[in-house]
Amino acid sequence: MNGHEGYLIGRIAGIPVRLSRSWFLLTVLIVVGYGSYLADRFAWLGPGAYLAALTFAVLLAVSVLIHELSHALVAKGFGWSVGGINLTLMGGHTTFQSARSSAGRSALVSLSGPVANLVLAGIGWGLLSVLDLTGWSALVLYLITTSNGFVGLFNLLPGIPLDGGYAVEAIAWKITRNRDIGTRTAAVVGYLTALGLVAWLVVSGTWHNVGMIVLTMMVAFIVVAGSSQALRNVRLRQAVDGLSVAALARPTTRVTRDQPLSEFPPLDDPRGVYVVTDDGGAPQGIVDATAMAEAGATGDAQIVADSLMVTVTWNRPVPAGLQGQALVSHIAQLPGRIWPVASWGGPPKVLFEADVIDAVRRNQQR
Image 1: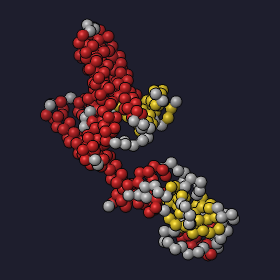
Image 2: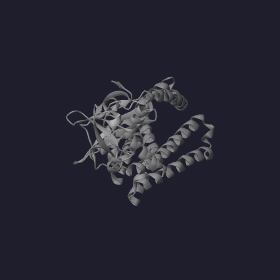
Image 3: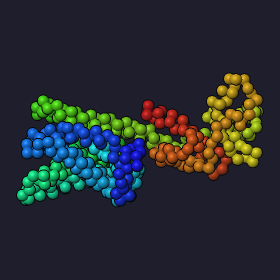
Image 4: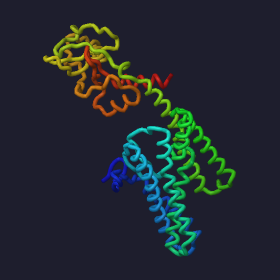
């Protein structure tokens, strides 16, 4: 099965696992680059060094899968909804359909992946030291060990979107009891980590190695981009927290489908709109100021409400008490761009998607 997120290769514990097309590019880079390294280090391999590099690429994907599966299973244990696991050019990621609910659980979910890889790497090093292996058996065990060790240590780097960055966020969140402070702290640590990686590249002298330059700068870029996005998410989260249906809902005034524009009653509220009803009084759609202005510009005052209205689905009202992220999450699942608001009586109210977006932008500017 092929989707926009990649090829579905199976399910583990009900969790879909997908292989991104970009993974094949990563595999080619590993075979070419790491194959050359293995050929120099293990001369007995000969051309088989590139087969060994391909083996490493596959084992690396398995290590990443173990890593992401650890995240997913721990998250499921906490009752989080897990969307799936994706193996990509940059390694992999697990999507959670439920937000990180607490600092402690967030830290455990973040650290579970690297810990699983480091445990496997430790077992591998132990076996290498006690077993007298040679040839391909020794090499495969060595590759399993190094792939898990690399994935585990790499993800412990303290910069978002790596697990170490989310662990820093969770620790600062736990100490301050403020998630936004935790995220900002992780972003600052991420910037310092990226700077440290570049400084290490220069001080250690590894800047002479083109491969190390590319790898280090790629990691630094990932951390800087992740930290910047984390700060944007803080601003967005704060902007969303100030939203409420009660403040954004627009009042309505009823008109019938065949009522001409010239006979529309005046609106008591400048934010108000007209709700168009059928002969039985059931609401059908909305006429707002934009539609009225367009009709007025043409000079057609006899145009009827039915010709001006935007159809609205009235059987899925938005609860009047929704606020913040709960409001945004709810309307994201609804069809259309205008929704009725559930109320206990009085004239119906409606919520416009455009009003929600404008409110978020105003809050961000503040």
